[in-house]
Image (cartoon, rainbow, N blue to C red; front, side, top):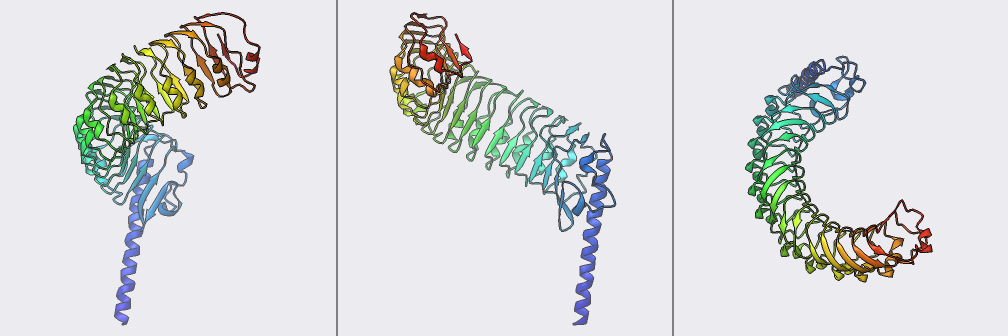
Length: 430
C-alpha cells in the first residue's frame, strides 16, 4: 500500500513538473515574440515579464492545465509582425484574437501548426501578402476573421478544407477571386467577402445550406447571380451590391430572407415574379440598376416589408395603390424613374412611414390633402421635379416630425399653409 502511495506521489510530482516546464517554455516563446514589437514600453502588456506567471498574471493569456489555451490581446496597441509568433510552441492554443492592432508583414506558413485552433481573429490590422495554403491544416477552426487588412492574390482553395468553419470574413482586402472549394464548408452560417474581388460568383456557394448571411458587396463580380443561390433556404441576409452582376437569381426558396441588397449592379428587365414567395422580406433594395417595366402588384403581398428602395432605375407605370396595405412600411424610395399617374391617397394609410421619396418622375395631379396628416410620423417628403399641380396640403399636424419637404419643379399654386408652422423640426423646405 505504501509503495502504491509513493508511486502516486511520484506521478503527481512529474505531472506538476511537466506542467510548470511547459508553461515556462511557452512563456519564453511569447516573450521572444514580444521582444520584436516596435513599442517595447507597451503598457497593455506590462504584465508580460519573466518574473510573473504567464498563466496567472499575464494580460490576455488564459491556460488550461498549465498550457496556454487563449491569447486575447485585441486592441492592445501592438506594433509588430507575426514572424516570431510561437506557432510551434503553443500546441494547446484554441483561441487567438489579435484584432485591431498594428500588425504588419505576412501570415507565416507555420500558422498551420496550430492544429487545435478553434477561433482566429486578425481583423483590422495591416497584414499583407497572400493567405498561406497551410491554413487548410486548421481543421478544427470554427471562426476565421481576417477582414480589413492588405491581403492580396486569390483566396487559397485550401480554406475549403476547414469543414468546421461557421463564420468566415475576409473582406476589405485586395483579394482577387472566390474559389469554388468554399462550397465544401457545409457548416458555414456567415460568409463576408467584400472589396476587390472579380470574376463570377461560384455556383458551388449554393451548397452552403446552413448559410444565414452572405455579403459579397463592393466587388467587381460579374455575370449572372447563380440560380444555385436560390437553394440557400436558411438565408436571412443577402448583400450583393456594388458589383457588375447582370441577371437576377431565382429566389423562390429563400422564404427566410429578410434583406435583399442588390443595388448598383447591371440588372435589367422586370422584378422577377418569384419574389412573391419572399414573405419574410423586410428590405428590398434595388437602386442604381436598369430595371424596366412596371412595379409588379405582387410586391403588395410582401406584408413584412419595412423598406422599398427602387431609386435610379427605368421603371414605368403607376405607383401601386395597394402599397397602402403594407402597414409596416417605413421607407418608400422610387425617385429618378419614369413613374406616371397620380399620387394614390392610400399612401396616407401608412402610419409608420418615415421617408417618401418620389422625386424626378412623371407624376401628375394634385397632392392629396391627407398627406399633411402624415407629417406626424413622416420625416422626409420629396416629390420634386414632377408634374404636380394644385395647392399644398393644409393640415400639417402639431408636433410634426417633418425634417425635409421638397416640391421643387412642379406646377403648384396658392398660398403656403399656416399649418406649416407646426413643422418645427423642418431643416429643408424647397
